[in-house]
Image (cartoon, rainbow over the protein chains, first blue to last red):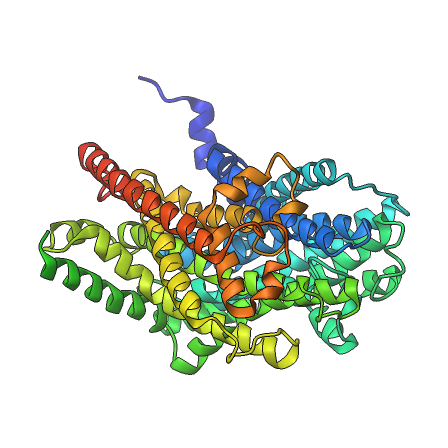
Amino acid sequence: MQANPSLALSASQKVTGWRLFLKTIVARAYPRVIGQQREKSWIFFDIFLPMLGVAAYVYVYRAIGAPEEYVGFVVMGGAMTSFWMNVLWSMSSQLYWEKEQGNLALYIIAPNSMMAVLLGMAVGGLFATTLRAAVIIVAGSLMFNVTYAVASFTQLLLVFFLAMTALYGMGMMSASLFLLLSREAWHISNLAQEPIYLVSGFYFPIKSLNFWVAAAASIIPLTLGLDAMRQLIFPSGALLGFLSVKVEIAVLIVLCVLFLTAAKFLLDYMEKLAIREGRLTESRR
Amino acid sequence: MNRSETTRSFTMATWLGWQVESNWTDPFLFAIYVIIKPLASAAILVVMYSIITGGAYESPLFPYIYLGNAFYTYVGAVMAGVSWAVIDDREHYKTLKYMYIAPINIPFYWLGRGVSRFLIGTVAVIVILTAGVLFLNVPLDLTQVNWGLFIVSLLLGVTMLAMMGLILASITLMVAHHFFLIGEAVAGALYLFSGAIFPLEVLPAWLRPIGYAMPITYWLELMRRSLIGDVAQAFPTLAQYSNLQLLGILLGLTVIFAVASVFTFRWCDYRARELGLIDRVSNY
């Protein structure tokens, strides 16, 4: 049997530099986008679990007679929990899972950039999670009759883009820190759920907290991203906003630069440290 | 049934479960981990409530929400704790097949694995209640507590949750790792339907029957009544029932779940052996 010449040619073509970087991103994003859609139960749980939380908090607000816009705040916050869960479990602790399954060493010895691997995870995770968050917003809005009044689509898209870039940059940065962890990775991710929902104001306006608490919580990009989005899509959002949208956009830009740069440096450092201490293949169950 | 084997399975699993849950870090960090998560969960509700009501903690609705949320900690801890043992042993530690060939009683082994989560949950409940009394005027007076009702309800409730956990564990035996959220999903659904943080009247009328069919609804009501008596009875949801009637309903539902758990385990265990699922590892 004769070999297909085009296949033989493509197999022999060596991709290097930025082409390899891009191919790595696409290759790592692929299982996030395609693979996750194949597992239907994950799609169900990714949407169903945040919806349960959304419904519970909506009914709490209704039980205590809250104004209807708070229902919208909860629906938005509930959709954003998908992104936080994705960053926690599929970005930050991903390299720990890879280590547990024996893939991490393969990533390291392959001739591609680990930064590209993390970027691929981020891009793929962001895309897949956006689809789930959109379903939560649509379903929650229909179930609880949420109405929106968008003040500026351009600013809304900009805020979303910046918040997600900073958030996934933060995920890439923490992934490198998790490189050194073992069993504790699971517990740390588990711990970073409810406390973050609290300080980032997922279910209430962050302005309700003490100013300095809210300011400290702003290090998590979803805090300001969610606050700005609420200001832009709800009529009373601006009254309940923590800072003005323009200031929040400026802070989000700073966070984007900060987290992406830190991710690059930390990844290089942690990778060397993990190699030196022999932690890339350890499995302390 | 070999009694010593049953007891040994349970106590050994309790010790093992405690080690798995706690020895990943030092005791101080572990204590913080145990306390922060449930406290944050309660604080979300407190902030939501205080924003809307301006901090009207004296309203009967506040202790209703606060206590319901506090005791709901047990639901996630016990129910999901028992069922998680299957995933943990089969997929993570890959020891489930060894457990099966060891001289132990598997259902009691799983129940024992849930005890550590129960203990952790108890610490969390105590911390939440203490914070509520100290800082949020939750009207909990230890001299006024109906201790008899409290202890009986707590024991009955935890048994009921353990039986529900056993049903989930049996089902988990049949499904692959990608259903690892099954315990969380059930606990989340029951949070919504059991009147834990809002009276069932707030739900649409067509959803309320689900709440009335859930034993957790009656258990939480009993826990509230035993601790704050008349304040809890002010809500119309179960006002027509006396404490004794509620205990009877809870006992009846617990027996039903216990019988269901035995049959579910037998059937799932049989199918899992037939299909070779005991040592299946999905590797993700």
